[in-house]
Image (tube, rainbow, N blue to C red; front, side, top):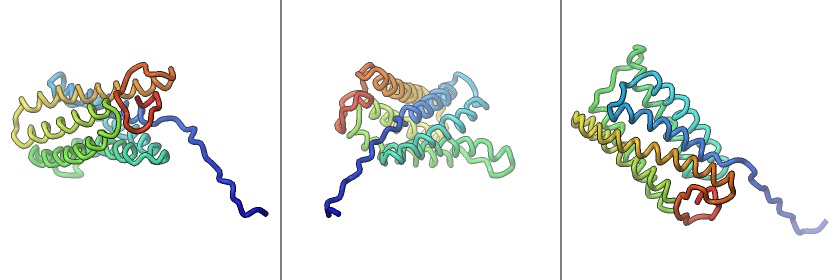
Length: 204
């Protein structure tokens, strides 16, 4: 038997999970920030979206990104998926008698810490496309605005945060649809901006 070994190359034929994660994040962010912008009160629709679409859908996408060896995508989708579940839990656990209601001041620390994490992730998007830079950049601003709202009690800051959140959510939906359509048509239908790593049409 020859000493030479034949390398087996495994081709990844699985689908791109990023659009699912962006969909879950984008839709839930839009709906919550319509509330923050004053269009309607916090209700079961937002909570349901937070648990199942913002939460579970993103976690599923994060696990799929892990299988694709994408540390950034796996961390982002899984972390923000659990963020939505934790946020809904902070609203519902007190009503079930399972925990004390968090004060606005305490929620300010919660949102501020997520803002710090998102700022770090934003620097990671500088090696990716412009669309993701917009998503993470606006999300960073959103977290800090909402934290500042809770620390100060300013309704005006909360309203501004709501509008920033709407821009963030819709930018994520754009990135979702762009990746889907670019892959389906095999060309750039909706541009995502310059990419420093790779040149696949579904990521441009």
